[in-house]
Image (cartoon, rainbow, N blue to C red; front, side, top):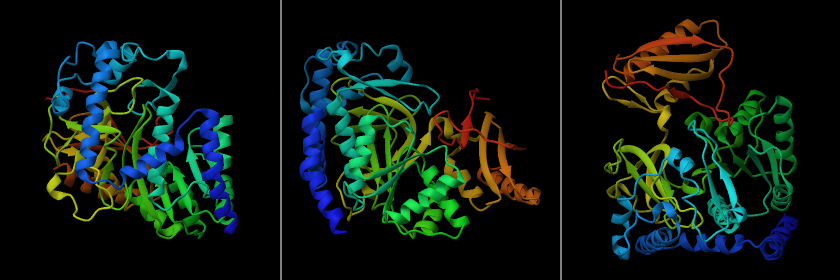
Length: 451
């Protein structure tokens, strides 16, 4: 224990500052900045956001060809939000088509870092950033980790999707004591080795894709194994309630941090001490809109638009992620909360993962996981909607009494759909994930919703 305390002191006081100097980055500075924001009141946070929005709007008008005629020449700071609302929504198609025009002319493209999205919406997109902007993103994410008690240098297991770790990433893993594993190609032997690592290094933190952490958890439950961890930090994937139940059993009721971001360069929100997500308001501005791009009332579901306040290389205004979410009405904000950032009530999921019934009812992933979690015999499932009044349910089952199980599942789905949809079950050997490796539980295919 004393050795680790000494190492963490050396890491934070010598190694990380030296790394910032060698690689011309600003990791420690940004960590300190975000820890400062954590202690601010609502009014100060709102002021910072408004000032940053005003500044980046001016920057984009002057240096980004795409926005030159879309932002007025004269407006003041108090008008920044109203100016933003008049800017066209930036879609993934538009980002791909106009990518060059969306770059600031103050930077040389060859000096920038290209960020690729996961493509989990079905459409690939990419953006550009300066190295310092990348480190700001990493600092935001890392300071979320600190909410759990994690400190740089603590031994941690991490599940990610970059099995080929380059020199810089390997260096980072080494100095941060990160034991890295691929999230989507794990065998029982791998889980056995990971469990031994948990015990040998007395690891108290597990970071990464919750679907992979859940598979480790299921392995441990199956063999009657347990290991107490302080926190599980979820990123890059959906954190389902039945995962949490497994984590409680195998990891002895750990604290859970659920994070929300995207590969285009946004760390949007994180959930820790509340049932809601804290929005990183000094970094982004979030809007929730309907299908026509109009604001919905707080408490109502809508499409997520994000505006970056720190990405000057390629400013994003009203970027449509492809997600749906709900903002928490201010009247429901808890009086006692750890931070004063604005709150998201719920992140519903992808637009392509919301079922719409013939009577205009919207069903999210949790509408179905809340049913299937009671039937462990169903090892995996996927809901497919080809038209407005029918659902196909593909499933993998290892139980001879599956007819009774399917009848019960059908009755429960009929309850939530008001019996407006035909339900067809298809037993399969395999259910493929997204090409990124993320599980896809709902697939809504293109069809005319108006009958």
